Image 1 (cartoon, rainbow, N blue to C red):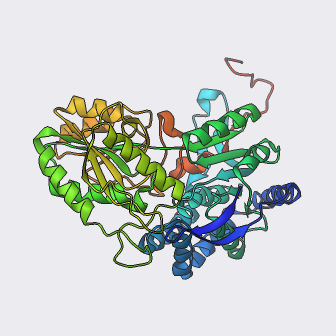
Image 2 (image 1 turned 30 degrees about the vertical axis):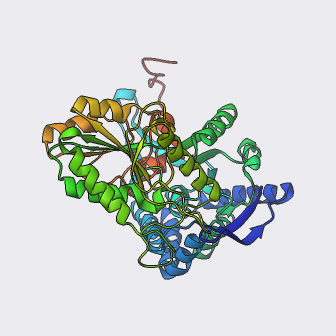
Length: 470
């Protein structure tokens, strides 16, 4: 396993790291466990001060951190700066709302033969986070901010191509004042994940990644009886109906497909358009996609940078080639450029059928599949006809259709007349093969809490065991 920073613009290896030894890994887990014993006893006010201090550091060092992310995985510098800002906002959100989210929740004491009855939320312990490279700061922060505020500690196994970003995260939380070991980065390969998860000091795990990785984590954690949250792949539909503002939908569709160089689980990937507006949308969409500038991600004029890895770029190209060889039509893009760097042009492919890889697989790059449908029912059937169910988009100004899409689309989120994104205020996660559990909002904080029932009786001889017993 190679742990290294490799610039995707040039393919040049800039810095390498030796994986931790077994002894070093054990020491990291021990520090994280000891920090949990300390952190769980601190007040929410104290944790909030530390989390706000982390936000201060992120904001003060935004450009430096963004430059590092761009260097490691190729997102545009503008997008990287926005990611840092979003992470700081998430820290402040949980610092401000943790008291509300973790407050004891009273219930009907009389109904359960108690004088008082309530639910209390308490931390569970060290949580292993196995994170991907595509949003190397944000993917981690949407777990770390609520987990640390709840009193848990974090053990980060980041993707092996973003080691410097992983180490920076540990440094930010340490400098913000959190106890030593409260957030620990371990530089190890994927082969070490099972050992970490089986360690009794680690109490839960969260993973954002592939379906294969999610199944592996889920299986191990199941045998160890440890809670997991899995955010896996997505092949999000973007449905456009006749009442939609077609030009606006095409504009947003371009951003929705090419955000983060097309490497986002919740990027729109399958564009399902009603036949009444299909031609207009296809023309506008292909025009906007072909107009995007591909180039150096540090250049302010660049819209799409390189894909993060050579293997990822080759996989995207293979999926497009498979579709073309089987009869698909390319409206724009579709050719892997020559020269250094792992670039791929914004591409629109139509005339797809179930025999093509693009029909069923997630395409992790700036490639859109375009589909024509003749009715609402056909649109929903095609949108739901995938193993994934992460996000979804529907464009319609018909109130009845809006309500139907909100109910009928099989996904963890439905965005109507807007682009799917994540907010600290809203729960984030999927259904079907896109995983389970939720990040962000109060639900994300509660995922790694002991949701404890507290029942208080009178303490007299007449207060029995209740009407029912298990």
